[in-house]
Amino acid sequence: MPAHMKIAIITDAWAPQVNGVVRTLTAVTDRLRALGHELLVISPDQYASIPCPSYPEIRLALTTRHGVGARLTDFAPDAVHIATEGPLGIAARRFCLDHGYPFTTAYHTQFPDYLARRTGLPAAMFWPFIRWFHGPAQAILVSTETVRQQLRVQGLTHVTHWGRGVDLDCFSPSAAAPELYAGLPRPIQLYVGRVAVEKNIEAFLSSGHPGSRVVVGDGPAREALARAHPDAHFVGAQSGAALAGYYAGADVFVFPSRTDTFGLVMIEAMACGTPVAAYPVSGPLDVLTARAGAMDDDLDSAIAAALRLDRADCLAAGRSFTWEASTRQFLQALVPISSRLALAA
Image (cartoon, rainbow, N blue to C red; front, side, top):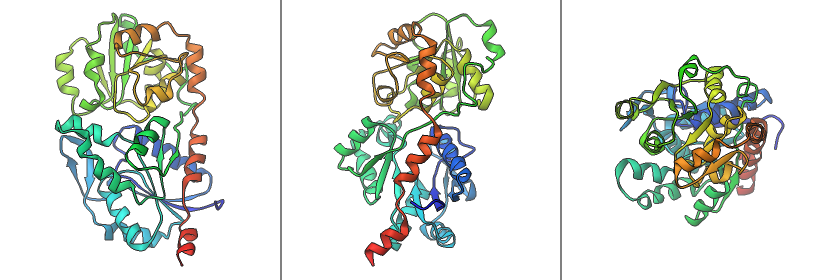
């Protein structure tokens, strides 16, 4: 792999969206630039867009493969990575196939499960699209072994590992807890993430463990959940030192999702010394150790068990994830365009 490359990254998830995909791409692109690589990021903020049905925070770019292709042609990348399965990703995929450009993709989201939760239709209906989208990629980057196995079952065998990291300068036990925590009954149980139906936040808010429940994040389900659970504290989206303080000051981090591929927020919580409670499903099974998290099909039992864990062990587990390692894995997975075109010639 050349020491310095021109890398094109096409993503339908980008700021001002706040989610794990955006935070992953932002962290990795920052480190790629620091290493001297030249980047072209094609993202929705650069185009006219419309709100995603049922999820207006996500914008769908209005463009064509020709518009995306013109930017790729002008940039003349050494490698192309298509991060998401949205309009920009589809346009870039078509351009690359038309011009014989190899590309990598990433499977960040349990897309069939998310759509099943939102539509009431079976997840199996959406897998043909996933196979169509990712099938021509030279490699599909995934974050855990569980997801790799799921894709292999679907016939997508060309998968490679791309882990996640934590900004250890930001997320640490020394982060100052928010003033809100001073007046709350303990234990403080924290959720961080999108406030949306597929995140299963209702299970967290309905749990019976005594103490206080705090929700950090925003999304289409926030208003309804706040009405249904007036005793919970909804504080909106947070970032940086403020977010780290919410993690560090909490007694337990609760991750109720059953559909995430990884769960970046879990390792951020652990890097702040906060134990994690979760269901034994994809994501937690791959990320948590018995000394840093507790998993149970009964979320109350998982919360109770997590509260008994040693915060020093949680900190050690969280600090094992770095963005530097994640960036190296991303670079190693890329397929240089010149080498593939030379083989085809």
